[in-house]
Image (cartoon, rainbow, N blue to C red; front, side, top):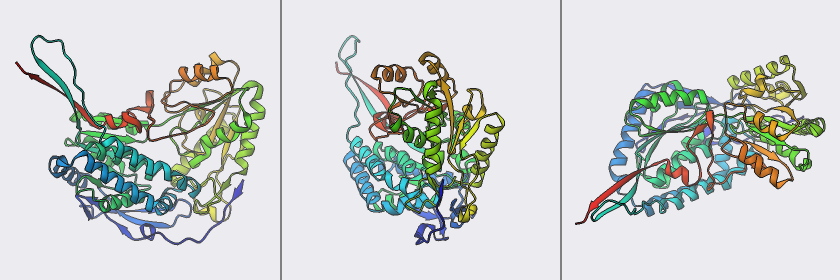
Length: 498
């Protein structure tokens, strides 16, 4: 494992230790309570910014502003105008992309080599939603009632959307929530994660620069148990779009019961990534490794349960371990770094706790297995890429979401047994398989109980292709036409003409 040392940087204006307010009704304001919280660089521990800490009163103010905008001027904005606003925002995101990618790196640790690679995805999502804006329509339906009765449907914006996002990809998560809201004519109150709020606040600045009217996009940083809970239970919020843990997702469902608001959830995972003996192993080694090690394993659909056919198990898992050992770990601002820090000390304790659990359960760490504390990295939250061999299905490291750079390698013998074991999880977000046999690929893909199946690749995503989960990984979809539909109501209209 190569280790990157400290590097000099030019401090970003949004990360120079200054104070950042929240956006409500087109104005930058303090929290009603006057409270603030700090956000730190997880690679170095240095203070990036002090941020206004929103709670229930601030959520009330933001929801009221969103409601006024939804029922007022925003309701009269035509699809072409909304499309133009999204295209302007896309242009601004593209123009300022380097600084946005640096903010993601500073605030949550993902290497620049990763955050810079999201240019096409971030800009592409906004332009995709812009295209969908003018494609929203109802349909005429011939009914079977006697007489002359004309029936048709309208697609209408659902209303005020409460959006709650995690810290593991602030830029794309922010766009994933506000893009379809603007496209459909909804308004939104966004609660970014307290661990990484800066990119969302900068996107809010760009939204105003693009001309998006006051109250359409509001951003209220704060903690989940205060601001997030208030948004989830608010009686004037029509929909909650949440990405995060399944435990929080369950609490949001309970909170939504008060006014039966619509809920879409993209939750956690414990995804199987399957390698057959007939696979192109040269391609599968880096593919399976980075299905977990990318973003330091902080990806909900990471392929953390690595199922490998018995005949190639020792060879393949050994090669994945050697690949992990060669990855460069360090401050993500170094463009050569491939593995950055975990987002926080809390996450570090969680992941290292599972490393201890895995070894106590009898798994063998072929690579990694602990915290990285060399040189300047001692100040950050770094864990070395870890590969556990000899993992059994009932081990906690094979059943529970770790959210760190930890692979649990499991052997299998036949395909029928494999599918049953791969599906033996409460989650169902992502899955992968590696094989040269097209028939086998189709059969296994059809049998896996997961929202995405990647064959001979992993984590491929596109704005036009839906992403979401089965089982405890949530419901609803993001990206694709299904995502836009989640922000719309369908109204049936009947007209008796004679």
